[in-house]
Image (cartoon, rainbow, N blue to C red; front, side, top):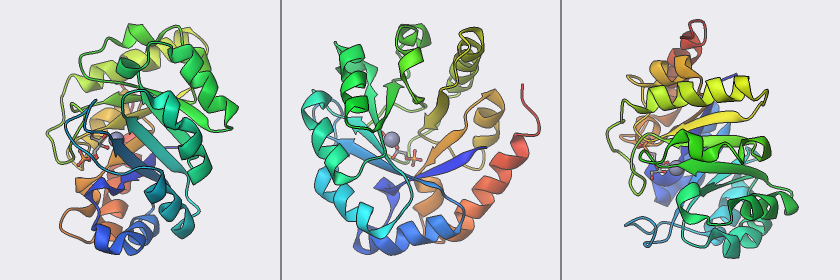
Amino acid sequence: MVELAFSILAADFTHLADEIARAERGGGTIVHVDVMDGHFVPNITFGPPVVSAVRKVTKLPLDCHLMIEEPDKFIPDFAKAGADMISVQWETCPHLNRTLQHIMDHEVLPGVVINPATPVEFLIEVLPMVHHVLVMSVNPGFGGQRFLPRSVERIAHLRRLRHEMGLNFRIEVDGGVADDTVESVVRAGADMLVAGSAIFAGGKAEEKAREFLRIARRATEVSV
Ligand code: DX5
Ligand code: ZN
């Protein structure tokens, strides 16, 4: 079942609870929370206090995408704040096996993220451990960027690996996913679809979420 993980980075922060409710009414079923530290990526967003606030206004699962150096230090705080999923970047984790175990020890679903320049094969050793793999389809740090077309083949490669290894991790895609790109990623095998500006830019999040999902679900009928 393909799901919309709407990224609140593009939402109107002055009305965050209303924005989340709109996207949820439109069929969004996961809240994607982009955590940036100004070191791993050239931008600063929010941390555990905002996750706790969001936890109070929705029952939807919170999918925390950590674009931060030394994520191990902050995993307990995000777990305590109410994260249901925590994704760490392969590029920031020299001890990734231990980091993923640390997330699981806090009873949170672990995910691993790869930047556009990181080969999919680098994940083979940890694929049996993860709940989901997040393929960045932009270079992380900002919303509203253009989708990188090579991401489609990387998603298909991951799906092949999942099949060959007899695993069942979910495939998430993030960055520039919108009405004109969502079909290609769904057909390649993505089932957790992160979208920020496609849902929140210019308002009407409920209608935009509904239309986005209509296109995404139609694409599930045809897979490459
Ligand atoms: C970028 C973030 C994305 C971003 C998505 O580093 O990880 O989640 O907010 O925003 P759009 O959908 O606008 O590309
Ligand atoms: Zn993200």
